[in-house]
Structures are given as C-alpha cells and as structure tokens.
Length: 374
Image (cartoon, rainbow, N blue to C red; front, side, top):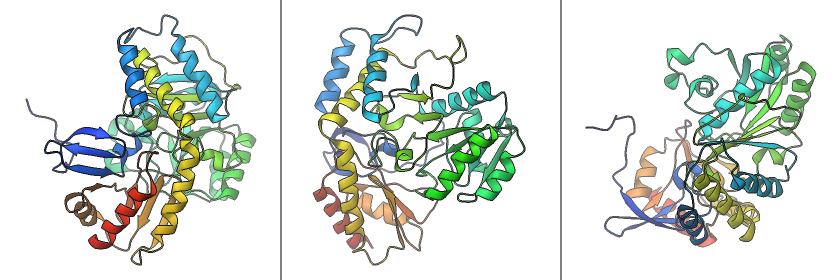
C-alpha cells in the first residue's frame, strides 16, 4: 500500500530528538527551529515529559469520558493557574482543527446564529467549519464552502461594523499573531474596537491560540498582549509537546448542557499527563519569561542581517521577511547547515517556531549559517 501523496517531503529522516536538536539515522544533528509547526514546546525528549507519560502508561492509557478522570481536573486547575484564566471552563479534544470546530459549533449554539467573521490570511484548520473560516480557497472543498463566512481585512473597524450590524454573526474568530498567514498582528486600537463591536452587536469573540498559545509569544496566550477578553480560546500544538492534545477555554457566560459537545479520545489519560508535564516544565523552568527574553535577543541579532525587509512576530513566534521567496534559502539552511526552519503562505517569510528551551547560542548558530547561506 502507498501513502496518500499530499506532503512534499524534505530528504531528512529524524529518528531521535534531544532538546532543540533532532538526529537522523546516520547520527547527523539538526537544529530544530521549527518544532514541527510549533508543536515542540518544552524540547524533544524532556525527561519530565517522558517520565510523566511512562508512569501513566503503567497505570491507565485510556477510558472514555463516561467516567471520572481526575487528571482532567488537575489539568484544568494548572492551566487556569498559569494562564490566569481560572474562571474559564475547559473542554478537551485532540487537535487545533477540532478545537476550532468545537469553538465554532459552540458559538452557534450560544447565539442561535450561523455566520462567522474571519480575517485575511487566517488559518484555522482543515475540518469542515474550521477550513471554511480559513483564507485559502485551495484547501476548501465544495462540501466546506457552504458555511456562511465573511473574510475581512485586519484593522478595518468600519467594514467590521458594517458586517456585524446585519445581526446574523455568531462570532468573530481571530489569530492575535497569525501563524500560517505570515505572523501579522492586529493593531491594538482595532482589537479594542473589535471587542466593543462584538459586544454591541451580540457576536462572540474566538481567540485562535492553536499555534501562539502555551507561552510561545512571551505571554501565556497571544491575546493577553491586548486588553481584550475572548469568549472562547482554542489551543493545541504546544499543549502536548508532540502528543495529540487540543482544547477550548470557555467563558463562564456560556452555559454547558449535556451532549452539546463530545469526543471519544479528547482528554484521555495519556493526553492529560502529557499536557500536565508541559505546564509543569513551563512553570518550573520559567519558559514564558524566557520566550520573551530570548525573542528580544533574536530581534536584536536579526537587525544585523542587511538583506531582511521586516522582522516579524513576538516571543518565540518569529520571522524574517525578505524581498525574495525563501524556499531555496530554507533548503540551504537544511542541507548545508543542518537547521530546520519553516515557511508560510507569505512565500518571502522565513518562519521560526523553536522549542521554548532554545538558548542564545542556538540563535547565534542560526545567524552565522543564515549569513553564509545568503
């Protein structure tokens, strides 16, 4: 049987990982500045992470959500503590797309409305409603295209109000640092207007933190860089450091009823153990403050690259934009200098999403290689 060929692959086969490095079958090390799409939050093979999973494997791997799972409550408590959002409610699932799918379903339940407003260059997943609010027609199948969605530009409160005034909008979904779209951020004045307009016209606000959450931006969630209170916060990727985990945080104004949401695998025992391990390491190693500090170091060093056009991002969600497409540059960094980087829908953007454990000397290695490659 062949694999369904939907991924263009680089000729690298990692078989082992340690902190910010992965190693191929020949023992060649690669500096991982992409973290598998921002998934690796506390580093490859972190000892506490491995121990948490191994200990849980010896006890119970899975049972359904029909029984009491104290690990879910432990996770909710720790997550509330570190995010300073302990008044929110937690629903667990398995991925970022599933998190956004549940968020979109929930706002429709809560408001009785169906239309969603999203933004240009946004990416929210590949399931039915999540892909419909994603600004990329190439990945939206005809089946998904019938959802009532309006894609608006960032920083345009007049157009936003015009759409909200129609009265049929259930929610606005926004990435406060766009991921796949190229690390653009809304202006603070627009975010303040966004919240006011949502409240005025009865629409809920969804913060998509799938890529930017769990301390990556130097705050626990990227929306916390703004004076705004979302109704729902979606999360995944760095939540499990490689183990499939997702979830949404739900404002207390939204009431739960039995059967409104559900999942077979979401919140299973291993997933909770993985996410608890991530939170414990973030707290113990002070990785949130570290992400902010090392991100500032990157910004300073990036200014020494004369070819760059823009430096983008915040914390350890970073990018360098050039006036040329970066696909060949990424190959040079990978094959000649053994450094993994990422791209985006902005083909001129070199995107970096390293583990939060990265140190200055690793960025020094990157900038030395980048100058040679350029």
